[in-house]
Image 1 (cartoon, helix red, strand yellow):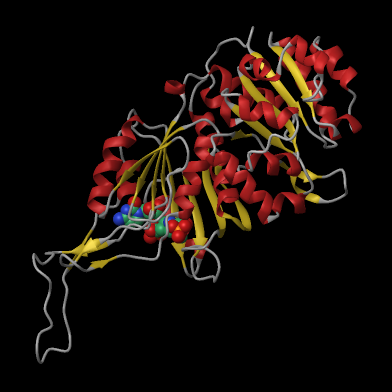
Image 2 (image 1 turned 135 degrees about the horizontal axis):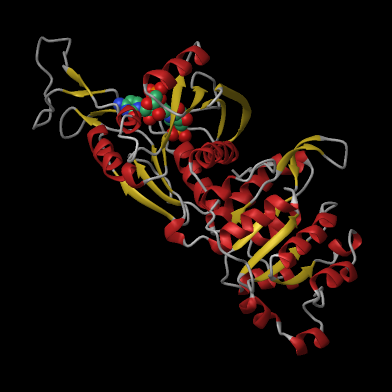
Length: 427
Ligand code: PMT
């Protein structure tokens, strides 16, 4: 996911503390997109909230909005060049990088995102981003095909792995006539996300517990029952949750993946171990997501020593016993301990009926159904498609997600879960 948070609702409000932005120092980077005109409104919102705002524009951005406009709104000179002796004499770029409480880039174009992802420092804005240790957020804005391009998705993932937070992009009509994801989030949604970033103490951020990967059920010391889960979907969810500021604990079965930036990882092997960790963590969590492909059964009596081939015996009979249903047990916790619970349904046929049944039978708030019989999707791949189904006060709502990178789908799932959480959490 790259993370896709739409602009119609701002789930980050679910965990915003009531505090003020007065005196907070926002370094606003503006790059060359048609959405640059919305940056003017963003500056106004930040100023009205009492922030100090200093704007840095890329050279291309100045073709879309003039520095004078943003200077008038921010009440500060707008910086456009790294090699400007006069501006450097006022506040040098390293000083400016240290000054910021937050670095916000809105709009962030595909080109700027690519340069940031590669750690370039070829203009003032990218140099400041490298030099600043403040939290950073991008609001991407570009044509839908550019947004969907694997190179952009790779770059966005890199920024997430580097700890950047992200708001949007939203989907809809684009200035170029296309329709799809890539519109910059609306200024009030960006303002809300920055407010959360600046005012939510880490300890107050929602705690999200995610299970990922397969489990392994030992038959003997060298053999086990398992499945094809690579952990990619669950790790993408962890990265997407961290990207919107959540505290994330990932309970992972055996996988070969690096831990996303800012995520606490607990490695387990068997379903029973995953169950124990989930039971321990879930009562303190706001949101529990069961993405792991948990083995439904384990050997009733794993052999102490390697099972030997029996001469003259062409068959081997194993007795299996049921594993605990981790997610159903979390969903059944007493109300004061129960997080919002999101499950997955891996199906090969009749997806909607089976998913609906699991939503009800396991007592979940939301389920993400994926068809694991389709080549290139589901198990092991970088892409997935899904049918999201969630309960509301009025009944059940759903949406379909076409094949897309798992990181992108993960952002949509996290967004939807946070919308449900904000409806549940009084604030
Ligand atoms: O890991 P990847 O290679 O990226 O692949 C992703 C995925 C296909 C594994 C993922 O998208 C997915 O579908 N995960 C759920 C797999 C699964 O076990 O589905 P299920 O329909 O059998 O289980 C339904 C739900 O119950 C799931 O939330 C599962 O985590 C949970 N469960 C199942 C059994 C059990 N004993 N305990 C559980 O908590």
